[in-house]
Image 1 (tube, helix red, strand yellow):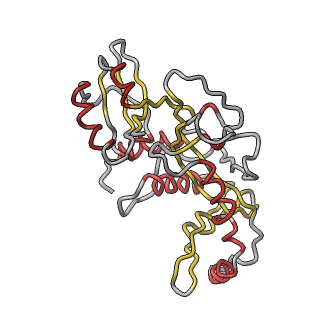
Image 2 (cartoon, rainbow, N blue to C red):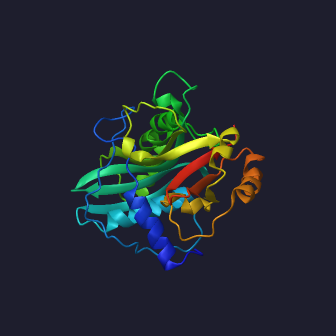
Image 3 (cartoon, rainbow, N blue to C red):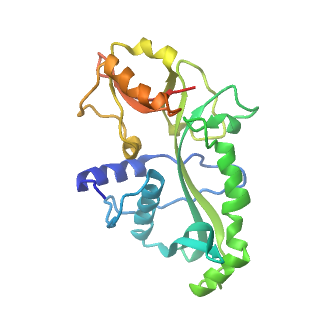
Length: 270
């Protein structure tokens, strides 16, 4: 990948510091895997190709897992096929303290839209107004996790000499959450530590005309804002963000106030 070692380590550290989307209670019957705080603080894997954000998050998790003495990775990114057609993929099969676990890894960005649904869970949606939390939970329960019990998966596990394991199913679901600007949001089911900032629409943008702006690349969405970058003036940010908005894309951006306060936000197109 075209990332410097320092940049890659910064992304890894930011991933590790991202909180799980829920903690004590199971959401939609999904159990979070608790990774012991024993993993290596450095990312040690070699990356041969450029990865999307979600794929890089998987590699970060694998790095954490394989540096924990209590965890053994049996297989990762297991393609399940039928007649050369890919049905899906199991992210990882593990032994955690000798307990067999099938793990699905998720890293998402959600904004809270109070106009959606009737419940807290139904109101979290991707900033581009796609890929809602409830849709992801349903996909995990109805498609991704049941794949383990399919005949085609059993055939694959037999080829890998893993068919004798009875796997428990867990997720490692991390997320960054963004709430509407200057609106009170009650969060009871999810982990409030996941809230990283707010979102605004174009009509609210002028409120921040005296701030400086920065639009990070997609992989840098992992990061907390920092000041050591080339900032944009308000007018330049409006021009650059318009390219995203015209394509129904909501850019993530950082802001720097006159008082030196750094914030992380989305400018939504809708």
